[in-house]
Image 1: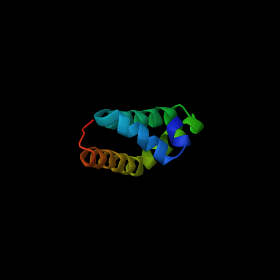
Image 2 (image 1 turned 90 degrees about the horizontal axis):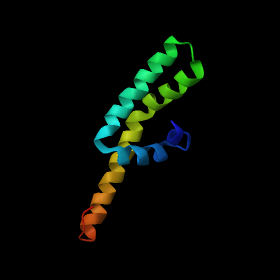
Image 3 (image 1 turned 120 degrees about the vertical axis):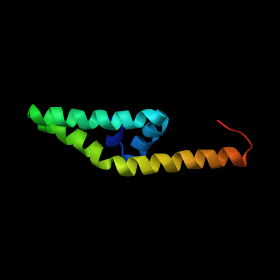
Length: 80
């Protein structure tokens, strides 16, 4: 959520670093949203919901970032 406060690109950078664990983070955000809703904690629920709603765009940006890094690695003959 802190990364999303800085924009979807910042959140996408974090998602790219998480790799395969990113889906777990998305599921956690959704579960935390549900818990906050039940406990009538509207500000927190809104923040988690914003993250869940932004996830498709964040995931797309993260994939673009990974693709760009792979293309650069191929261009310069090295792999990360």
